[in-house]
Image (cartoon, rainbow, N blue to C red; front, side, top):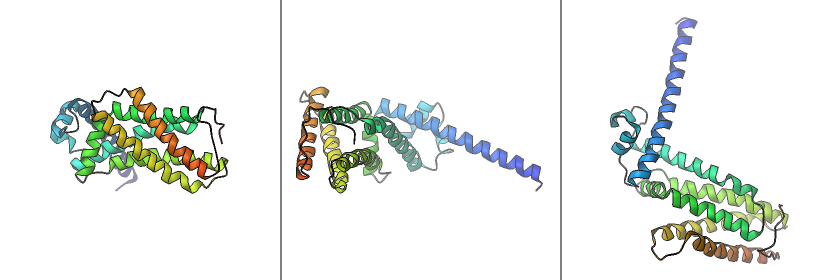
Length: 222
């Protein structure tokens, strides 16, 4: 094969790869719209309809249903990362930071309720562990934040990870239950309640290290 012919072949391959990736992004966009409309039991037919194509067209760009589920899960994790990026730049009092963090998380779960249920459903049926990925993403953000403050206080930073993962588990399970409950707690009331619980756990951890903080006083960056 001549150099010119090889260049043309490589060029076509690159264009096809780029087009395929763009179409995958478009189909994931359509999948998110379909999930929002039809709920966690959305079918590939619903997704194809939202994309304006025949269902067979989906599988020209995804190996199978699992590949499509994985692409949706990866998009969800990127969304969470974008939502949580400001958490590493928190300022104010401990209670303000806690309330802001919980507010961000509970708002995301509330606004993406069907997506979260969809990810949970496919995690349980052997699909990608997207729910674990989402929770791990949040916990890693909090671990980095806690490590900074614990280091500044001269405390053992090793406790940052278990407390971060424990708090994420508490907030996530409580929020899922709150979303499914009809007991009348508003988002503000629920966030305030969770913030108090989280502060109690953090306060106990700090006191074990000889640090006492007033949750209502501004906390300097470490």
